Image (cartoon, rainbow, N blue to C red; front, side):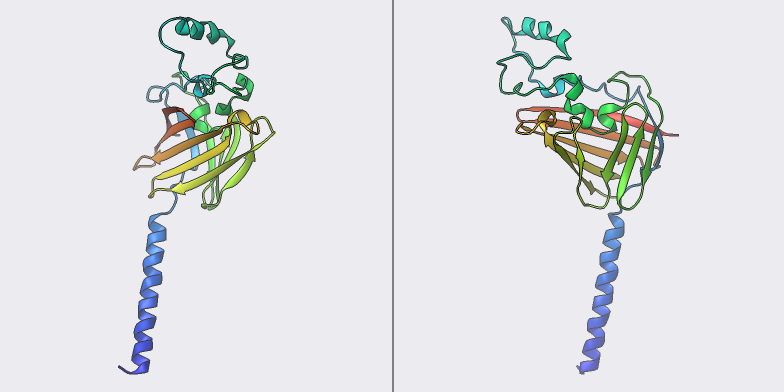
Length: 224
């Protein structure tokens, strides 16, 4: 084979390789969440109480159940002194990590089954912004680069990453110190955002976990 023919074949292979890579990137393009969304209370699961997201279940039998009932009205108070490891460093409700989560943990007025107000989302190649009248403004990365934002307590930072999974799903993962306070265990919030084939229904499945405790719940939104 002549040198010119070999070079031509190599060039053709390079062009085909670039074209194939471009198709793969296009196939993994992030879904488009832009628009106005309303929570579907009938299809959404109640959001667990913010304090209970980060507290181990009360012991069964004996005085454990009664103690659990006795503590329930004190949802705005810090964890009991001398509590177990799962309760150590538990914040008041005002500083609960649930406030640092995405619409899945916040929209819906405290976990009831009613429909919430319109949530407006704007999206470009790098970021998704969420303007929620009940829970404020939030930002999520869409370009694969992590972003850092302050926790609710403005003491430490939370790191947020976004990973596309096909054309209809994004996975957002937020990590921060439990309760937003330095030195605490790590709270991880994984949100799987999935669009229906027609793009009119958004399902957000949220898993919140700290060591030995994990809660998962689903929220559904309809596009207006």
